[in-house]
Image 1 (cartoon, rainbow, N blue to C red):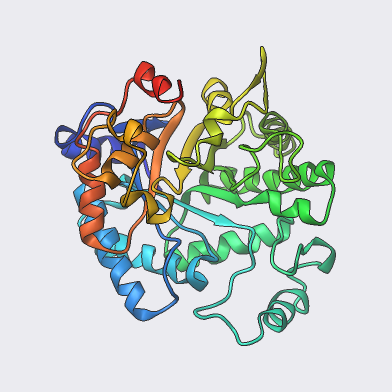
Image 2 (image 1 turned 135 degrees about the horizontal axis):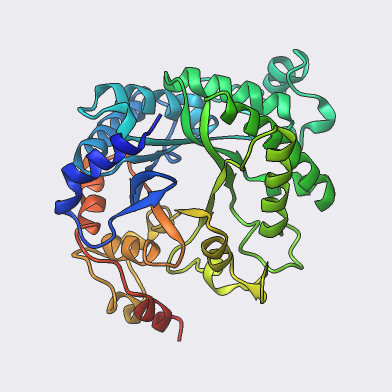
Length: 362
């Protein structure tokens, strides 16, 4: 897994190429504030090859955070990440690798009958209890998360991952109560605490889409304070001295800034945004959709763009996302080495200062 010495050596090798605070701390590791995501693309050999080149370019150029998930591209993204790490001229202990479990993954390609595949491969084999399966596609039961982590390690060809996310836990709210979702999260966290103690993961967290950036009245709302509390209970149940819950992933960009503007999380002095809560709680935040899956590479609001540094629209959008309070790394999906180089170049500019960032919202 990533180590303090490996990531700090990586920062020493590349740090002079980038602007202020390009490398940031996550635990005792030094991680780039621009990361590479692997969500988009069809499950084909051609896309695999493109991602392999893109990831290698990123790792050799100054990006040492790679994000994936077992369900991305029918497990192909994880497998490609693993091959790229082996191909790249970079040590494994310099790379922060994150993956996710929760959605039931297909294997290599989308089956003709997805429902039958899930039933045969997961329900009939006993890997998933039908009562734990939401909408036929999502499960966070401890035994299932255990199985998915093992499969991810096998796909990646790694002994351990640096962060393992429970993927979109708000999906569970489609069929169960909020209290039950917290209970299920605590059970999953307890298993992940055990896996951390065994050395299979370094940290864990939750990767969300809506949960932490919507008002309390929203059907998808989850309390970050309650999630953190459940992680602490899980650490105690696993007899760990401290929780390994460290990272939150959520979407954040110029046109999807709810994580900064919506004050729905219970802070020590009243309600605050998810980003401020995370910063004050000592959590690291990884932003997804940092350029809105490519749409912000074309155009930004003029008043915002004028306050951001970068040679291209995409670079300015990335620099907006990584300027927000509490953000450790902004993830950008890229399967084209040229796009990776453009994203790397965003880091050669300094991020916005706190006052300048606040001014955007005034």
